[in-house]
Length: 188
Image 1: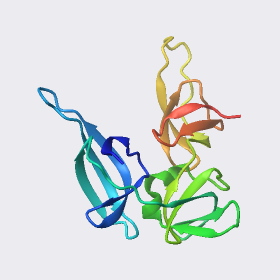
Image 2 (image 1 turned 90 degrees about the horizontal axis):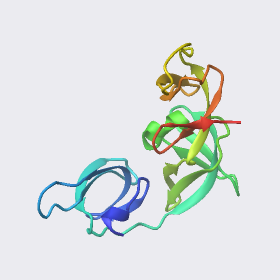
Image 3 (image 1 turned 180 degrees about the vertical axis):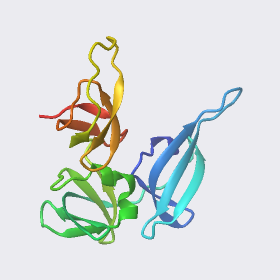
Image 4 (image 1 turned 135 degrees about the vertical axis):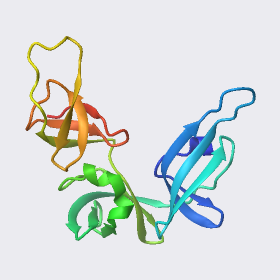
């Protein structure tokens, strides 16, 4: 798999270890012969040791075969998140450091998730593209404001803070993109 084709959540083999890509930074230097470079923030699987590595767009990394099991969030066990397999109800326990920032998108009964499994060990989580969350705190709309859409901060039921359009009020349910962390529209 070429470095330019790798996405967040992919699991690759690198220097004798297995790593999950958690963050990708793309840089394209200006000037003559500037090749696009990719900087991956990867975590070892299992173990969770962080590694930063840079690659050219054409560098090849072998992708590791992993099972993706569709699951729903069931409950929190201490700091760990427990997901149940949608088919056979196998519980998958993922530590808070594996879930990372995605914890802000997880609500009771959240479905459409995929737990990534290698050798019967849950190693990663893939959330649905958008999730529905409730707004618990946002300032009221300013009357007589300009016609332009001004974003305002809003705190969601999970504690996550995002920018929403002015017309959104407390108690509304909104769709949030789990990849970008941005408002995607009203739910319901």
